[in-house]
Image (cartoon, rainbow, N blue to C red; front, side, top):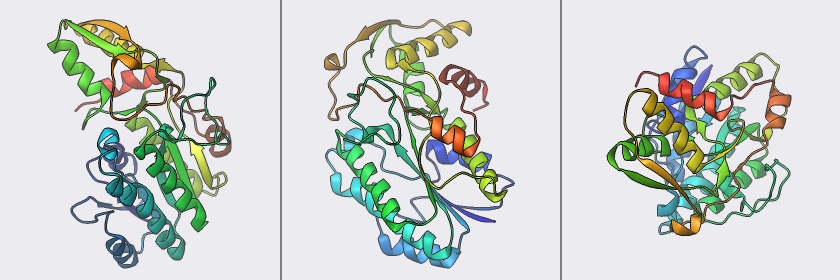
Length: 289
């Protein structure tokens, strides 16, 4: 099987490059060889490569930057996925695409299901929702996997930022009123490879939209506290953590206060098990860099 993976250096892509080994011929295309902002380039490469499966792990993920460059955010997060869906459908190849909790406004008091109406608060959220809708409009075989609070040992993310700041500062304020599930990129990649294996074995569930995040819930303060606990277990001194409300830490983008995603449907229909966020964090931290 020929698999085209879009995105080369991103958190999820780096983990996919490990988890997809052995499932087929893996062709990885980063921004330098396939610019998702160039529609004709997308069409040309897919027609030349003729993949049997397309996985789009590339996106404009700079949430705050998207507010000042909406055209680029929509080109990469909305227009490009629609073109990928069209070209993949023409080849008879399924498309796996990743989306986000930012399609919701966070006002619901329970975890969000796939049936809940989206209401994004930001350019990033609106662009990702438009990408979902573009894929769905094509109607080809696809999996749209919404996830949340992604971290890993690579790139820019909350885990690496906290590990640094906790050792640099004496005190640190962290938002405590946004609730979600920190999701390790390695868990996303491992589940994705399981979905591919089940599809190839004829044991997959229906195509469509699913939620894929770690199980359980915490706040950013709770996540930071767990990171600090692991640093202290290694004998490292850490900053004192102070919980603060979102209003005390203004950003260009409004974040959903509730980012919890109900993943029942994915686990039931595709026969996969998702790790709880704390055990996944420990597994991530034990991974060699």
